[in-house]
Amino acid sequence: GESVGLHLPTLSVQEGDNSIINCAYSNSASDYFIWYKQESGKGPQFIIDIRSNMDKRQGQRVTVLLNKTVKHLSLQIAATQPGDSAVYFCAENRVWGQNFVFGPGTRLSVLP
Amino acid sequence: DGGITQSPKYLFRKEGQNVTLSCEQNLNHDAMYWYRQDPGQGLRLIYYSQIVNDFQKGDIAEGYSVSREKKESFPLTVTSAQKNPTAFYLCASTRGQGVGELFFGEGSRLTVL
Image (cartoon, rainbow over all chains, first blue to last red; front, side, top):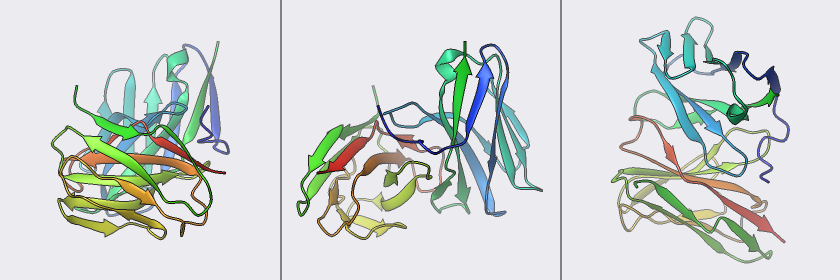
């Protein structure tokens, strides 16, 4: 398997419970944020995004919350399933036209 | 299906050798990127390209080189000057720099023997 995420913080949740994964971003000028899911040995997959003119956005079983005051982003996963086990990381886009900056990620482990 | 294809998935290199990682996209995206991923760290940008025949260094470009001769292709060469090349390499693309999400390939794992 892939060694990505060996030393990451881990969140363990029971199957069926809700999960909350947090991310602190660094630049108050960032205006676009994305959550990605990465399974072992695979490339990151887009989950949900949010722009700085919003503070909440919902998708299928996922919700992203943005608190610009404290530069905090969270991903909520409802009714967590075994297939949700992966590393989750946030990305911020610093000023339109610049490149993304990525957080180190959190490993989500779903317990049966 | 549209997407990004990286090859090879696994690659082994002897010290002192250059290796080239392939990245091809059929999404008609203008911007392409190479990232390096190490355990416990966020993705770090190696090189990026906004248009054909143009590319810029990212945060950790030393020991790497790229080309962008075609819109759909952005190969990365890991040269012998890269002192610690063992890592997972990810190629990504987007419609334009800073516009919308990054689409990623499945990655290439390079191991130096």
